[in-house]
Image (tube, rainbow, N blue to C red; front, side):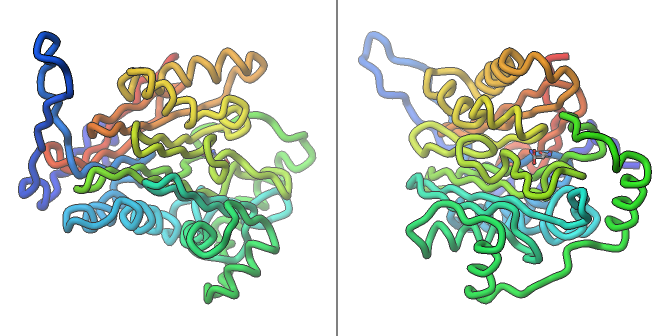
Length: 329
Ligand code: SD4
């Protein structure tokens, strides 16, 4: 079996691309060491981020836009029925319905989002259409579906036989229990992705079927700009995974970006945001929340509450690599 922690895959295109050196602006007395800018670079959450990064990298390595890269990248996860927390094959809500949340944000700070969307294979592309073809940021539920159909998206049954039987099993065992604030190894794995292209522009995308067995109508952090995803082209971008309610309460990804704006490196920014999530949610002891972040200089970092969260980074030096996130516990 693949060892998640030791898996390293070198990308063929990586060697062709180098790092670009930049001397930071400073007076002669306080001249700082040159800062290495790694371009392009893409990072995403969880092991399935490796395959998503490959698709994103094809675009980035050819000089494409980060926005196109993140959309193409997360679409790989959305279309994979084996991933039980994103797109088709995602585990449904308590009523047996798969509902999808997604958002996207570009280098100009424009953003689009869909929530509680049913029967559409690629919510991230619908979110992009909301961003580019409407004056709005967010469409939800039946309105989002109607918009998608009008834009030419096809209706698809997202509930696979495997997901349906898991749902029946879960209902038999837990169907009468009240919802609990627990995201564990079985019901997470949102894909969030942030990329820096060769032009030095940042974009991000986030897409999920949300917390498994959620109450019908529940929306998590993933489609909420600032919670599940945030990008500021002057500073960096961040994406979140885990118990969405805790991330929403802390406006997690906006917070990560603001910590980077204050001069923190991406890992420190993620750690500080995790500390904030914990301090603001003392009643939720068992939850997992993880952040990934990328700054304008191409540096990456991550931090989570509990061990077990990995993220995938593809850069010119490293190729495509799965990295265990540092955790608080
Ligand atoms: C949610 N944050 O809906 C999502 C679930 C998730 O990794 O991340 N899973 O709360």
